[in-house]
Image 1 (spheres, rainbow, N blue to C red):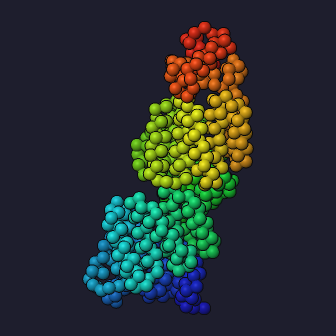
Image 2: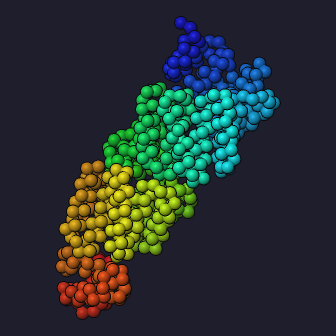
Image 3: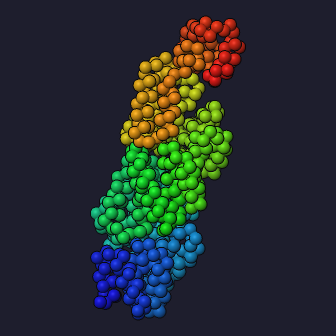
Length: 541
């Protein structure tokens, strides 16, 4: 058996684990030539042997320099640049290798495909530094060089990078026209595995960044199929599991989502600390939503240790545990620190819930208003649903049930478009509360029942308990008042006049006067002060 010959054969047929084992064995017997060191490095990278990848590329670089093959040496340096830039602890080394590649290619002063890879690496560094226009220019040059030398891998990576820069510039339509075309070459098997995996993960992340969840789901499914067909690939599998779990969560398959999140934690804990943080956070989110608060606490702790801040999940956990002040403090700090659109949207949604629990209508209104502004700028069903849902909750808290219904119906349309049963059920709870405030008790019960069925089916235990409590109207403690009379009494307790109450509820002052008279009669009260005392005593405010 010839390990070197067999290793080369395994490499050519894409048997990466076998290629790595055989080439490493051949290298142990006799140091490999630089061309075979490049093969060993590629196999090592694809099977998760990062140190072996770096060692093989460093040695290939040195051997090419000894031969005076500076362009080939630059290629090895660029390989080190790309692999090290993925690891936060090696950014300085990545920059050093990039500088060396630049110098070697400048000295060679010849047209070559490596010039395109150099521009891609430079563009990625520019993106990291926030220099989007520079990155756009570099990616364009790299794509042109890839076309000239007919290098499909370079063209795919460069055009994908160009699409990402267009997204940074809020040119979504133009960006996804480019990204979708790149994905066709990726899914068609036209691109090498190490580039395929990078483009898959990057495009899926881009879809999530702009809340294009339909497109994200489609490409996540494609990534899952690709990973299943390449069982020995390591770098991209954990990220695939996390995204798959998120897709399952949105579609209501929570047990399956939890299983995927656990597998992602196990896989990534041994391969990538930064990505493990994402997996632990996803595990925490599903545990919290299912009512397993102990497990959620532990998962959020592990996510934080791996570098993923556990918010807004941990703040919402504190809220569920009855620690509203702690939740409010945490979410306010997080909102001060985070400005990026995607994480901020999730923080704002949590901020609305927390502020309403604390009866802080000013904070709730501000968070809902910012969500609405984002939704108007980025037209996506998720954002439309989140913004309309927040506005409905705030309108209910401000005793504007008719307006709340309008917002809630728009939220329903968005969540139905995404086939998101949990979010839709939450909105139906709001609709039920609005119906109750409008004296439609039967309509309210129907909405509560529909929401409870969904919560119970998908395993949202805390929500199921809450809606069960809501489904029993507070008639006994309200002295036989109707839902509308309870709303009027609450407003009386705030000191509102009949005119203000009429404006808030969008009814006539004459109708308000009739409700006030009925309240006084049913509760045997003689003044608004007495009505206010009753409302506070019976916890109606």
